[in-house]
Image 1 (cartoon, rainbow, N blue to C red):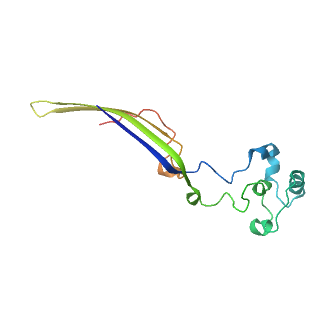
Image 2 (tube, rainbow, N blue to C red):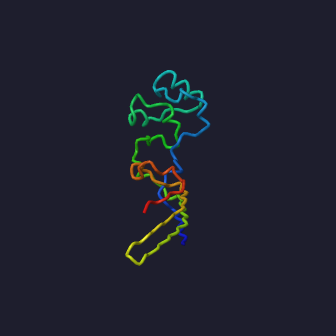
Length: 146
């Protein structure tokens, strides 16, 4: 019988998301998707007291949405590389109880049975879901086949 455990801190994660739209703008609904240069977009920005900076339209073009301008850092879009924006805020814990039963017989036959009950909790699985194969949401006990 045995116990295995680990606790990891300062893991790469995307928890903070510093350039997310403030939730106070969520009631605007579909007005957030109006182009900044359209009359509807101009009216929405005027009602909020926000003006379009001189550098904004040349940087993004005419099709940029109102929601982009309302972000804390509007000069950065959502399409920036997530790997370069990871912060070290994630944590992970792993706890496992393992048992093994082995029986050796005189005639050379061996019998081996093992069982592992484990649980993983993490908020920083990966920023790249293809590395885990999408299995990161599962925290059910695993029974290995040996």
